[in-house]
Image 1 (tube, rainbow, N blue to C red):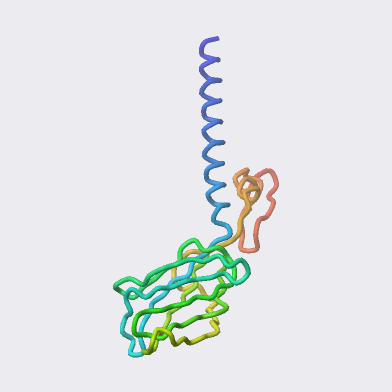
Image 2: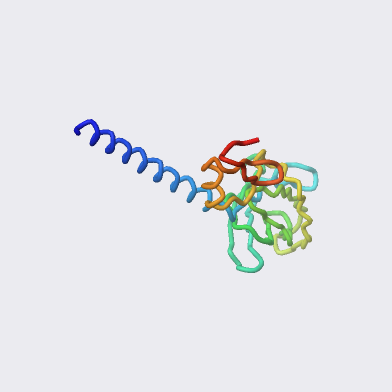
Length: 175
């Protein structure tokens, strides 16, 4: 009787741990399902790096705003940006302010957006209609919007993943 109770306690504890870990992982993955990022370099007309440039990304439909500053290497990054279409404004002392419009952020991808500033008063501005590349070259991440129910279905062993998506397999045997 004692060994049966111990076995049940261990089984319950294991089951509970699996449930907690599964929920934690699925909620973390689901929380990032609607985000991407914008990253790039800020340079002047000669190709020299521009440090401490102030950048603002404003989502066109919700007016959500993100801020960044270019590093000593001229690099900047807007991490964890909600998907949508953005206007990115870049300014630095001694340069004209540049606004790039129509920057599209997609799920789990990084938009490569390099900015070239031209010399001039900070009150002057240049408006550029961005044609952001659809090829994601900033990182090796591959994004795909997976719902938690799809993750649970995959882990149940009744489905297998293929290039065409999920495929139901008989008796959990993958072919």
